Image (cartoon, rainbow over all chains, first blue to last red; front, side):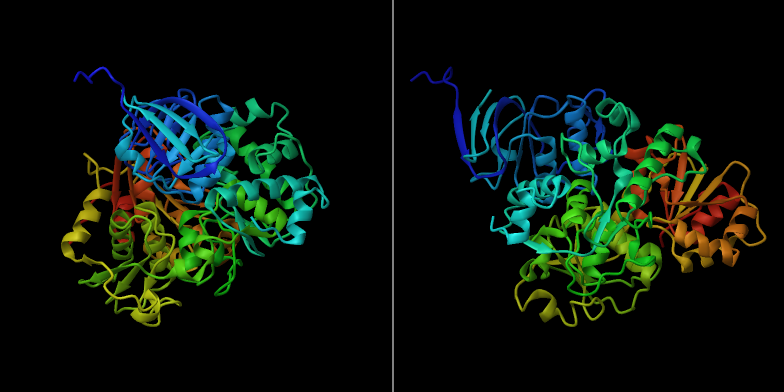
Length: 143
Length: 426
């Protein structure tokens, strides 16, 4: 049977961090993501030296990462991305913590966590991802 | 969420627009955490110095009106609300700028002026301006079991681990909303079960020098994720700077918001109590090899020359000032090397009176208040030396310089005097 052209779809279920829905291209890291000193606000690129996403533009992406790391300025950095028009479209995190919860609220992007599979394993950069945060559903179309 | 009557009133705007916006934000945040209710807090610290660069602030608030900046950047409110006074006892964290040296810090005078404006605003609304990452050194010392809403990673770890008070790692927005309302989500570190240790650290070597306390914290932080570690077999009782070092390193190298040290920290009289009696916890070994791993990770420079020495991360207290002044008395630092000792203005006032500031200044160094070595404007080729693993960890990302040496305070002072790094780990 010829299945190669069929697009592979995966659905993950979890819980809402912040409500709303979005779809777009995934940008994935298995590492935790910082806030303070992590982004260039002119370009939306990650400038955290040594990070897996170093040099990658987060704007307009469905950002998939382990959890938030680092300082109390996490929420300020993620709110600032919104103010300069460089916000990701949604956050999908493996684990939630205060940084990601507050960050998603002030970045005003849909966000989900505690999914039934590790999103940083299931989703690859470039996959097309739909997030319905209120229902806690993530729909992945593999590239 | 279950809201108490006063919380519901605030949410409905019956206690004014500022409290309504603050409550709206806290409810969304608490739902994001998965919290079911709030707990009262009367101890908050605000990291106002983390406000974005003036360019971004000016784009959002062209008038630079303080109430509008606070509404948008502190409460995430699109509407301008005017706050009378905060409800909770609240102090400021480092503002990250010493107003005397605008040109040496990122953003120059314009950003210094913006931060001074925010400081004036915060004082107006009843926030006490301590300007430090170590509020517990200068008058904000929460008691065991007290519910707090603190910002600044190392202070959060100190609050939970050393003082036995309770706080999550709050952000600028949530802490300000807590200051305004006197509420914080009852979640995470506020709950007994989450404070128990989950990983045992089996310490095989002496942890003695200040440097060693940074190294063990940094190594363990990099290994254990979000878990609470229990350090065992640390025989020697640490002083405050050593515990500050362990707190700062564990959360800079990782995410340790709380740790226990058996027979030393408040909530760990025994291993049994620290772990809640749970058996079979994973054990992480810390010996010479592990210490070396942390040391190597923090030391990376291709040159032994040193341009800038930074001491006082977290902010130097009186004992550090005394020790550093003692090492510099009657000496001159190298003409090509700069030395900064960072602290807060209440502490600097005492250092001034005591003569420590004069000794350090006469030797060619400078004592900075309310700021941080991370905001220095430098050329990317600059070589730094510091005695803090937190400083060493963040210097590359914050300043753009990839050249950092980390070692003992003595090695750092020697580097300032000679312009050369001669540090080593035996």
